[in-house]
Length: 91
Image (cartoon, rainbow, N blue to C red; front, side, top):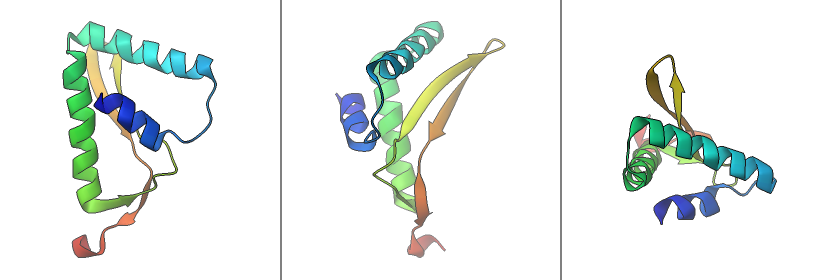
C-alpha cells in the first residue's frame, strides 16, 4: 500500500514499536471518527507529498508524516514534512 511505502521511505528514524503502534492507533481512531476510508487517507497522503515535492526539495532522511487530529468537533489534516529548500524554479 502507498501508506506503507511512504512510511518505509520517509521514516528512517529509529522509533520503538510502542511509538509506532501508538501513532497507528491515533490514525485509526481519527479515520474512524471522520468516517474516511483508509484508501482515501492513503491517497490524500500521496497527493500531499506529490504537491510538496513539486515546489520543495524534501529531506528524505527525515520522517514525512500526515495525521488527522480531532479537536472540539472538527478534524484537521496535519502534514509534517522536512523541507530542505524551495526548488530554484519557484524562487
